[in-house]
Image 1 (cartoon, rainbow, N blue to C red):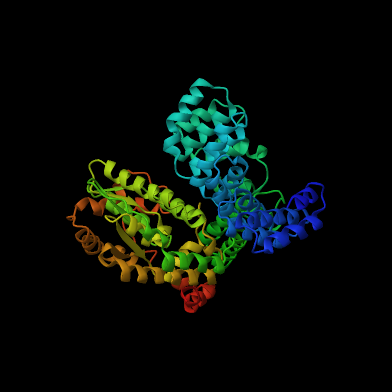
Image 2: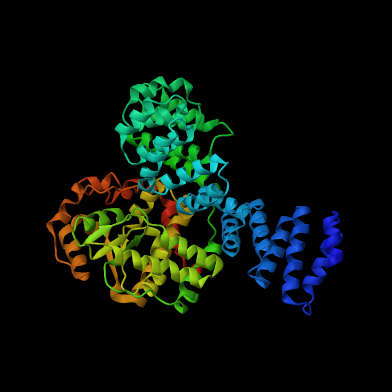
Length: 564
């Protein structure tokens, strides 16, 4: 080993590699030394830029020694080079969980989490980095941005106000405060702050004016906004922005600035699609939706091989059953509203929150974070702690018998939820698969939805979600209640009344006036839940079947190969 290490240090990588691989293959050598040999062989292969071989060696090191911090770190870096960014994120998570002081791994984790729009995870990581490197103000700025995008602007309100009072000339603080106020929809305060500032980027200022309805001031900034994707999105929103903003935006998508953000460019395609829909030009609109998803598919690749691994872990292995469930000791109980996105979860939460027995908490990230970490590092104590914390949150709720987490994607984790929170209930929202698929296709989500960027994959994923529902019904019976979107809209009182009876709660007429509920809704359905019930979204896919053939083919193909 010493000879190989000296060869590695002086750059004799092929010679070092040969020795390390020989040690790694020798079963008579202790496991820890073989793991080190695999890890060092991976380093040699990195230097030789043989990335796939390097991945194999680093993976072999972690298989032999799951606590090998350096091997996990190198595995993350190798996977980034191979474009396997989601797998890289998993490796950096494991590295940080083993050694929290590895701030280099934490920085990669933060940036990758932000890339995948896992804003809560990114915010947690940037918070640690900002405290560790107080001189790097950009980390603090990224933490604020991630917190806002995670829907946690209310937590920043008092903090940013006090910080700005103490440092009124701090440019980063002013921008941060502005972002928080706009996200909280306190437009009057945002405009007042904006009017007192001189060095805010023109693009941000124009966006704030637009969000606040002050298009006159937005127009005054037009010439100073960089002519990139966001410039053209503003052009579609602000009357008089340019002579023909629609044509200019379309032309930009054909010849974009190569340095422009892929997500901003996808956002422009989504904006164009909605604009063409408003003009009744459905074929053109669907083309822009396809272009947006094509861009996002490169940012968020989906792998059926990886999904099969996840399915086996969730359905067959279920390692959390060896953990101690959180014991209830009074107080409120959890309800998890789950299903595919755009299946009626926001509407149902709004209805229930209008009932005095329920408190809606919106889309929370604790379950997904705990499950992803457990899948990555198999740390049972951390998993138990996460669920015990959820139980304590429920017990601390005052004046309500139920609290609601309506993160739709938690449908994947209902087995762990119901095993580790024995008092919890799950409400599963279902919607017509074609209507649901079209609605997902038309939505530019904040979070990560890699399955949604290809219609055939989306159809197959929908069938997988149905299979997970069937399995949950078989295993957990009356702890699960299914609500169909069409039934909720067309037979509102009967559907809600049946659900309330299932939960042991009486009917309350305030449920029918859910649209008067003043609570903040931060999901893609925030506008819909402010309106009385309407049936326009039922059967909407029937008018676009010619554009949904791939979605239908995915539904027809199903997911039997995943379930096998």
